[in-house]
Image (cartoon, rainbow, N blue to C red):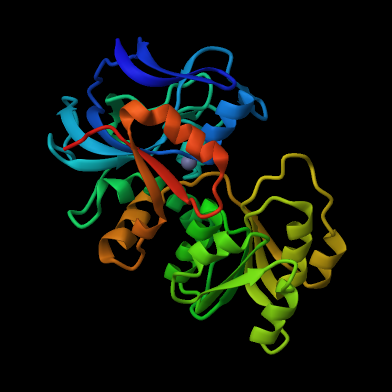
Length: 347
Ligand code: ZN
């Protein structure tokens, strides 16, 4: 039995003992969890009890954005050692699957992802995880930043899918946590400037504290016009749609330059009509993103080099015993909050 933050059912959390698998296989490591970030998906399971087809039918431990310290290694593990500071990729594919063999293990239908029913998450003091999906952190990268590699990896996936060229000008629609992660990854990936659009001024303020991220307040400002003004009438080389709303999906198509790229990152709750002819008339390239594959090494390298700084995005850190308060804070959706974290290790 181990203490964990358990989602009993929609709107009911408890911090209690629960039976969790803890057998250490030869290719696994055991990790003392230090910090876990609260993600929008954790919050959605808490408030709705489901996300699309994934329904919480039995008590489930929440949390999938984690960093910690290796405390034990399996007999076949050679690249990690006890005492290593690490972060973990929460999705474990079947490494023999066709998707894994093709390098797109994120779309393996049999992937087991922390805190996606029926798989337990990592808001508990110790977890067992495959060493192949556990990554050492450089000394300069804190546990708090390590726990943000997961959402940042989504930004990395989006930037990689966009095939950014040095000097590109990008638009991000939606300045939530993922929109900001995408903007930072796009800058690191070579964009000269990233414009970010949102309806909420406070969210834009958080994003605009970074150099070369320019806020666009909707409806006061027109993103399409601003991008055309910035590019001699041409438009954004890349648009990252991160809001998942019908209006911003239209904005994305309008703001993109001819032969530009639109990356669909945001997930509309319901199907949304898309102006295909508008996309065709500019011969836009469109890409989609589902989580990430092979992005942790790259994300950690950028944090380690100092090219990307996620530290300003930690809004508040709660103790493990206050996990439920941390979730209620996340549910409140304070516009200046980007990442709420829970710290299990008080050392
Ligand atoms: Zn997440």
